[in-house]
Image (cartoon, rainbow, N blue to C red; front, side, top):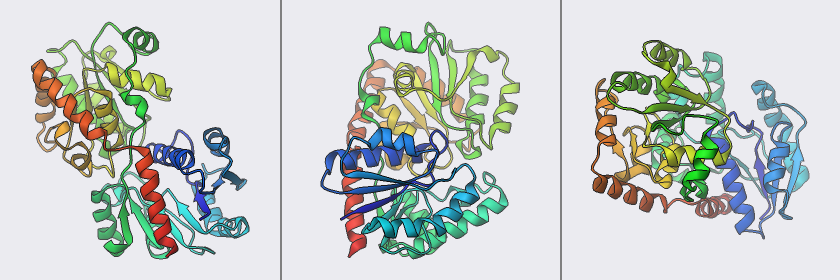
Length: 379
């Protein structure tokens, strides 16, 4: 089976967890299944990055479509008009699109990964025009593709609910986390890596998320402001400003000591892992997740996790994390204090349980299950 991989949606550093999903799944597929030829259809922005990831594997070839995907409407047009011809010329047996959309016409069977239906539940994030277009393209993908991959059972239910696709056509294939999060960084090295980012002599609370409205980062900032006089911790927020940044800035304006909040982005994997492993607690206040990769990363890193029972999060975190009620305005601040003050034995038991759960998620399994779905599409 020769697999075509549609990566045209990928702009490195811009699409969050879907970039991690694509790069890590393909890396595992190339590494562990060397007898499966992969043809990657790339764009100007991601071609060099993907060649750096996968260029050493002889079974992987690249076909670049010469356009910039930062212009979303250009990308959509080229995906619909130009990609099918490239697929035909490459002679692939099945085309896998890993980012929500797929060509209307294809010379071979198709599989599409739809990560979530967030634009339906939180329609304020994209513009009205973008929302209408996304909805149209996602529904086309579910109808034209032979199989649909969802990254959680929650996402599968959402896809079925909003597109009308048959549940029998949707396969659940979980994501995983980079094993680096579970590899302990020595304390001195960690301090060295973090000293250019934050004060390493102060404890901190960590959250990793771009500031979309549904990520609820403003609630974390507000909660931190309410308890900062009771704790010595700083708050470290990793992520880029997005449509919910206005709410975050409003919350920040009421913080009495803004010097205790650090905002970071574009970090190396080594520094990101060190940030996870060095925090006293990881807080993920999201109200909607298709998978919830940061939760799994923190579980692997061996730190207490406080999050919500929204979307797929309890499906991933199970009883290895602690939860707060985002509907209760005071619960987040109370649960942060409660988690920080857990007895050591209870904290250690929580971390051990989290690591046990996290061991069940790995990219080789994601690659293997994805291959199963691709073979199924050929049938």
